[in-house]
Image 1: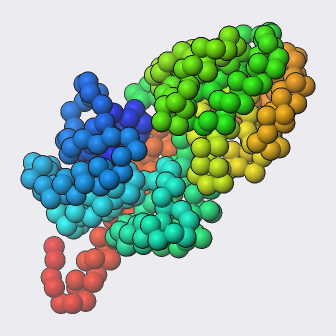
Image 2 (image 1 turned 90 degrees about the vertical axis):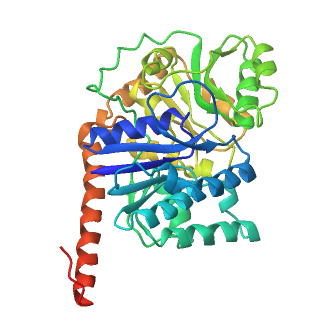
Amino acid sequence: MRILYLAHDLDDSAIWRRVAMLRAGGATVHLAGFRRREGPLPEPATLLGRTADARLARRAFSVLRAGAGLGRRLATQEAPDVILARNLEMLALAARAKALWPEALVVYEVLDIHRMMLGEGLRAQAMRALERRLLRRVGLVLTSSPGFINEYFQPFGQTRAPIRLIENKCFYPGAAIPPVPAPQPVTAPITIGWFGILRCAWSLDCLDRVTRASPGRYRVLLRGKPALDQLPRFHETVAANPDLEFGGPYRNPGDLAGIYGQVHLSWLIDRYDAGKNSDWLLPNRLYEGCRHHAVPVALAGTEVASFLGDCNIGLTVAAPDVDQVSDLLGHLDPPRVEVLRGRVRDVPEAVWATGPEECQDVTGLMAQIAAARGRRRQAALRRKGWFTT
């Protein structure tokens, strides 16, 4: 099966992780999309243009311009069986690609629900209407959390296409899933890891205040990419607090064992889109941390908290309140953390990591839907008296 993958950001490592998963499932993948940074890519891809983080108007213009020249840019591309579009702007391009290859199955990949899609304002209604129109030609939706289905796709009636859950589990391209190194015994200070895209101002303030209130009791390690448009004083806050430490970006999956091996707790609270996307998602750090036996810390009422409850693991803060966090953490000591970590360790590996069987299930589902749509198309042509081979 040949897949044309339309990506919003070729510099996002998650894009290449998905490519590797599709290939592990037996697909041939050609990647086309936009770039937001400089430097070499992991492998050649068709560049459709350049965009920038959070600049929606510029991104929309880039998509329109790319759509006008899409046929020329993909002229040498062999006809795909599947056109996979990562988020709404790429779905608009997929509609153009579908005109080039009418037989192809269009698959829509949604890993976040952007705030501009939500609410009852005119812009949100218009964006949802646009998505619904584009989804009429989509044969399958891939999403990463039941929260997106239950809180967005179903209530707003966005699509009648089947929706497949494909979680943000750890994935190890081209190799067997490696064993998790045995963690070091828990000793003071209790170490909390906040890793990934760091964009929650409430979390930074909370962790800063909790550590300042109990100097030396906690150590907070921060790794990943801070969103400085949301956290403009990130570096000043970290530098002024000896119990906060920022170690820069990390490689996924290569650095996961090393960074999570240094922490006892994994911070999963995100208030960036409180009541919306932040409450509905199941983030990468959930699977990364739990696979490496870090005890997850979540907020009650979120999809993450529900997930942890089903697994009977982790710590849940009752409300987004610094005193509540301080009280919860204040009852921890090394023996208690060891018990909590043991519960995480007892959860089956398949909950946290994607193996080749899951990759094959996803590509197999695409092939199955594409074949069924092809049979229906052939039957419709025969009913009209058109003969096909």
